[in-house]
Image 1 (cartoon, rainbow, N blue to C red):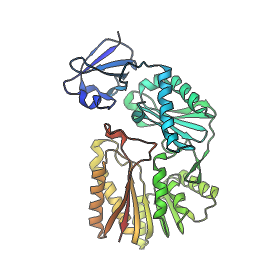
Image 2 (cartoon, rainbow, N blue to C red):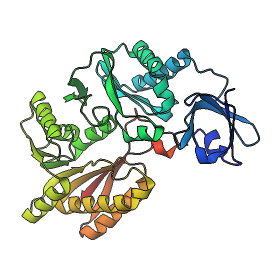
Image 3 (cartoon, rainbow, N blue to C red):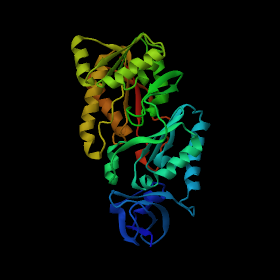
Image 4 (cartoon, rainbow, N blue to C red):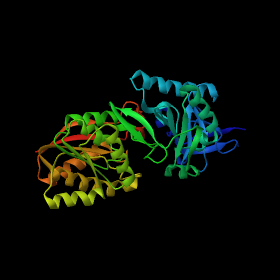
Length: 387
């Protein structure tokens, strides 16, 4: 007999509104018996049907709902969801590189698919998807006809699902480096060794927006593959790409050469230490970009993360020339927009500078967020004018 999940009184409100996660502590009782990872029916306390999803006893997220009506869990349904997600991106003009599937936002919980030219990079983040990996790959091949599909399920969240981290080729052949085009710039990215699925696609439009502000001397902190650096290089006099990873900086140099940019230089080191070093030297920049990795990955880390973001942005504000710009970001959904903005207010107050907020943006449209699921709204992008 298949699993029947009955929620506690009142716990269905968030889920009925469209959120797909059913937490174990929201469940009143479980009836039936099936294999872990099997499809389970979720009902309200009084038995009303809510939806179906894959169950995992090892996870705090007991069920991830993806069926709401009478539809069945078939190969055809899986393909139709992937096709619809891809058609949405194509309707917005995305062609070469973009996030083709964004998990819960595309009604495909715990599945991430990024397109890099003729190759796909995927993250399979739940037990249910792991057990149906072949079905997922078959659907992706049918929709995209890629030359290769590479799995980048090397993320810590897999441990919460009772899964090991995994990487490797799932289909075809995948080279060490793949060339994409972003905002008219050629970028060589590594699906196998790059950050996340190979590159941070969610900042594409924000990197283009930087061109309005990146005049004179630009410092790009936590530069990774050089997305912000190269967009800045189209208008700036000089760009310094700063990162602690020599692998990332080699990638920046490769991408600068690929585009014929001679105004990009790289520096290797800890960003906090380098910024303090610049301050001691009295060095300033016309524009500084701060795009750090997430400082907090759980609610319990928010307090420490707030201090880290504040210290980083305070240093940034002090190092911007009068009339210059600080471009600052956070990719942690736990650092909410109001909290991130409050942190910037605190940093500005401590800096002794007059700071104006001139542009606020979020993640790219190929990373849509669900209004009922705050976890899908995560990226903050602020442009500040420092006087």
